[in-house]
Length: 122
Image (cartoon, rainbow, N blue to C red; front, side, top):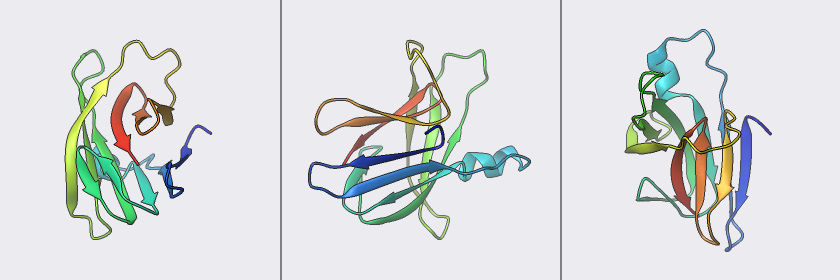
């Protein structure tokens, strides 16, 4: 429950998001390969329409004491950047965990990585 989430879209296709164990790797590797996303149908992330497939995800974090947003990245299987956007810091989030998905209406969800969130529209 702390490291993976499954979303089912209104159309019935599924979206799996999971974290990878990058402990012991450099911060550059952790920023690029912190997790993965597998989708069975179209999904919009970072305002980019993605098709069916699997993607690597990473995040460049601001300094711990900062209120700045993080940079969120998605990569295709070849390691090429597909999209990038700001992951908004949510200081009001009651119980941040490594990964969680919070529904925001019928057709939108927020993927939280700790306190940082990215909007998903399956």
